[in-house]
Length: 152
Ligand code: FES
Image (cartoon, rainbow, N blue to C red; front, top):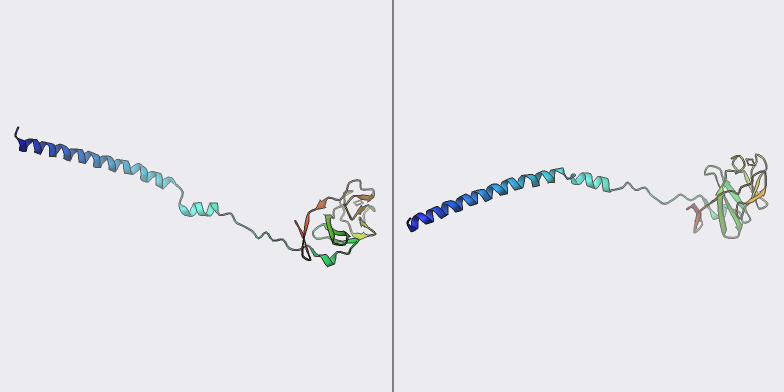
C-alpha cells in the first residue's frame, strides 16, 4: 500500500464518519422539536396565569354623621344595623333577628328592636336585652375611614 492510497482510505473513512454524525444529529433533532410542540402556547399560559381581578374598594355603607350617638340606624337593603354606643365608637350587627328571622326595624333607648315579637338587642354588643330571642345579633366587621363606614 502506498502512502497516497493510505491517505485516500483515511479520507474515505473520515467522510463516512462525518456522514454518520450528520445523520445522528438529524435524527436527534426531530424528538426535540416534537417536545416543543407539546408545550402550551405562550398565549394560553398568559391567559391562564392572569386572574381576573375586580375592584376591591367597597362602597361606603354610611357616613358617620348618619349614625346618632347612643343610637343607630337600620340598613334594610344590606340587612345591617350600624350603632354608635358612645361618641366615635361604631358597631355593626346583622339586622336579621335571631328569634325567627324578621328584619329589625328600629334603634331606640339603647336597643335594636324587632317588630315581629318584641325582641330587643343592646346596641353596644348585640346581646339580648329582651326576648323572646335568646341569641345575640351577630356582629359584623366594619372599618371607619374618615367619615365613611364600610363593611370590612
Ligand atoms: S323574629 Fe324578631 S322577635 Fe321574633
